[in-house]
Length: 112
Length: 113
Image (cartoon, rainbow over all chains, first blue to last red):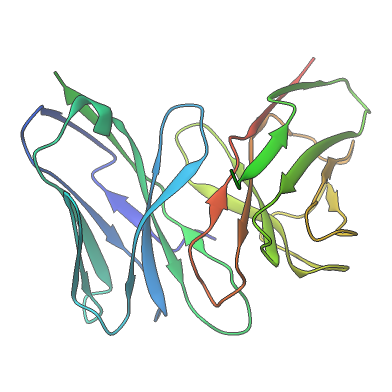
């Protein structure tokens, strides 16, 4: 079962522009994470935001979390061609396991 | 450098054949996971293990089997009962704290001959 749904499915922008992608989920969560996947490679963890946090920054990344709307957004500022990848949100809903549920992903293309 | 190694990178399966995908980690992580990724889709959990000699089914365990005899190793067998095995398989590990970040290998692409 996939809890996270990302929007848009695909996004194409020019270098230097900002990219925003959104994630919605269905049930209460412990934390929400964002991952990047380059074509044909594994996922790389980018950032984790806990359910009691509203905003978090890491370099050019800014993540927000709205638990009332069950949604999160990832903003990549001043994008570069190297940011071209698929981006996935993943939710952890606590309990006795370490399981994550991944969304369907946003494919970001940054044109040089 | 610590990390997760998956092998082989590409694997071909004949009809009726079982194949085993290798996953080894030297991160000293307790928990390990196997995911399946189909084109243009997210990851679906096949099996996971939180500790040596213990593992649980994920969302799509039918046609797959695993073992966890060592902390470092979590091999996945795709059995002949899995009728649609063509996919990209990803192994991951985590420290074991609840829902913490997962570290991924670079995957094995399995195809049918």
